[in-house]
Structure formats: structure tokens, C-alpha cells
Length: 216
Length: 306
Image (tube, rainbow over all chains, first blue to last red; front, side, top):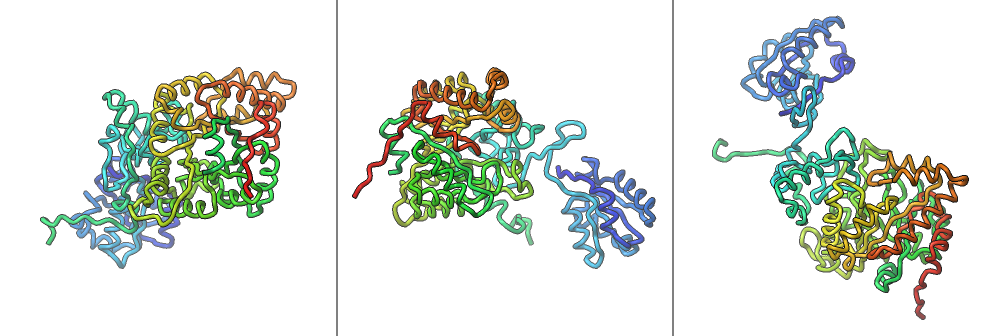
């Protein structure tokens, strides 16, 4: 799921500036699950803003990333000076796009596509690079989970199974090695994997997917 | 053929040094260090923004070395350049007569002085080796287009026998050799037991006949420096007795040199070790003494023609 983290309250206050009436928009999907932008957090932020002297109220919609959930907000948005979206960047952008005359401020930093590995801890597992290779690496993505995106084995810095860049992070290559060993597939690692085709990612500009069968 | 390749080809136990380019445009320190060590080494590595700290480019330092008659080894890391820049810099180096190319992944930018930078890692060090070899041997760029003209290059790579998973290190080296590595400069050797086991693995995999292994050594000035390296430098194993020995020594600097010389003497005895790579970080002036005391002086001289 998409993981987000609320921006510091001081930064949010600064963002909205002189706006007197503020609508805090929660999102009921991913950011609800990661406890950063759902109904509860929207209510909490609205009351914090009230303490700072704003007229703030909150609404949470099912998904801020879909037109049908966003359009009905029109009346509420007309009433306020500023909107703070607690959705991921996709939701925030859809609000801006749907109500282009209204300034929309992000209340979250959208961090990554991640997995809740334990209570209160999320880890990025996918970059969305558009060319999945995890089957070669025992289901552990080195593009995302190795700090150097190495496709041909660990760098020289892995120690006690931890990454040299952040020692609280498992070395992706240790995971890959251990899992392939378990599967008796170490020989898979002897092969030289060619340079990755990045044309499906980090290429410049946004990516688009079109399903011809659904596209009108 | 590069001089380093010639020395190794003749089966002479090679000695290489390493110099970090300065944090500024003045090549004087490079020149000074090269002059200090030129008679005692067969080639000198010039690091490529090592530990991800911005310095003068390796290529510029290589060129300064060449003007002094010092054989350069250019380091190139994948951290900062995509495949377009890597190939371009390789051609540039070739055009300037820099023939030894050490292909490295590079320290992550978070280790250095620009941790805010965007990382590249478009390709890894093995893909880099393979790419340069194809440019040289097949005259092909990474996209399959033709390289115009001959490329002369002696390709090397780094390797640490100490990084996890240990059982994978020899396999990874084999991959580097398969990708085109002709020489290897290792991470600094302090733990000889693990190193010897690794060398045994390499011999069993018949790699020592295919690639020249230059074992890395670092002369250390104090127990404190060693302890710092143990905690801060990735891919090193430093045994406790070594630190204790330095601590007990009356003159830690002299003891550091003694340890370095002893290490080289032991490395000389290990089958398959083709030479040593001395990384005297900011202490290049000690290299001549180490080389002489380790019985590796004089160095072979290139026959001058005409």
C-alpha cells in the first residue's frame, strides 16, 4: 500500500498561512491503514488547527484518488479558504485538479509503496519500476531494497545481514542469498544480469497505462 | 599493453599505490605524492570521489600522473554516472592514454558530503566491466552500436573477502572475472585467516589463473585509527589482537608499519596472490619504506625505446 507520514504541524500551519477557514480532508484508503491520513487523523488535525485559532472542520472520503468520491465535495470546498489533503500525492493532486480555483495543501508526505513489517513500522518493497524482476531474486526486489539497486550480488559493505547505508535495514542481498540457498538455487546468482531497462521508470515525466479494451 | 598488465603478465609480484585527488583544482598534492612513491610502485590508483566526497576527478589526476611518467589506474564508480556518462568517460580516458580502469560500484552517497544528492546506480560494477569489455573486444556500445576505433584497456575490479554473505564472496569474484575483470584489488587485509580461506576458494575455482589478485593493505598510524576503521569502513574485519598489539606498542606508528610489512610478507607466500595494493590513506610518504622493507624494491623498469 501507499505509505504516508503527516507533515509537522508547524509546517502545515505555515502552509495555510492567513487562511481562516480550513477543510481537512482525510482519505479512507491506504493512509488510513498506515494511520497517517484517515478519519481519526483528519479529526485530530482539525482540532489542532482550531487550537491555533482557525475555523477548521474535517471530512473523510473513501478514496481521494477517484473522481466519484471527490466530486461531491464541491459545496464544502467552496466554503473554505484552504484545503489540507491528508491523502497521498495522488489524492492531493486530484483535489487540486477537480477544484483548480482553490489552493490545496498537502498534509502528508507520501513516502513509498510499502509493507507493514511489524506494528508501527513500514518498509518500502516496490519502486513501481514497471519491469518486475523479483522472480530472479527469490521474491526480494534488489532494485528497491538494495541501496545501490545492484542486480549482481551484494556490495562490499553488508555486515551481519545489515545494509551498510542504514544498519537498521536488512541487506536485500542477504535475504536473496538466504532464500535462494533454501531453495537450492544459488546457481541462479552466477548468471550475469544485464543492465536494467529503465525506460519503464526513472525516465522522465509521468508514466501512463492504457488498456485499449477499456479505453474509449 | 599497460605497464601494470605487463608486470603481472611476467609474473612479477606487483606493487600498486593509491592517491586520493585533492578537494580543489590544484594538482600539486597529486604531483607531490606521485613523486614520493613513483620509484616504488608499478602503478598508482586515483580514486573516484571516494567515500562519496567531492574531489578533483580521477581522470584529471591520472593525467597529472602520466606527465610524471607514473602509470595511472583510473577508478570509475557507478554511483554518479549513468551508462552514457560511463562510456563517454571511458572513451575520454582511452583517448588520453589511461589504460588501467578499475570498475567499482562506489560508496553510497549517504556516506559522503552530499547525502542530499540523487543516486544513479544505473548499472552495477559487473555490468560496467562487461560493458567496457564489449566496447574493447567487440567494439560495441551498451546499446549495440559500433565503437569507432581501437580501445586499449586493462580492466580491474575491487572485491572484499570480508563482506556478508561470506560464502558468496568467491562466487561474486567469479562473476566479476566472467564479466571481464583481469585484475582485482581487494579491500584491506587485516584478518589473514579469512583471506587465506578465500584465496583457497579462488584456487579451487581455478580463478587465480584467470585474474591477478592484488591484496590490499593499509599502514595504520595508531590503534585508534584501526578502531575507527573497524566501526566506520564497510567490508573490513580487524582482529582484536592486532588492535591490542598496536595499543601495547611504544611507538604505534612504527608498529603500524611493522604490521603492514609483516602482512605483505605473509601475502607474498600465499599462492595466487599476484601483488599488493598499498592504500596509505594520507600517508603516501611511508610507501617507499614499506616496499623496501617488504623486499619488493627495486621495481622493474620499463624499457625505454628510442
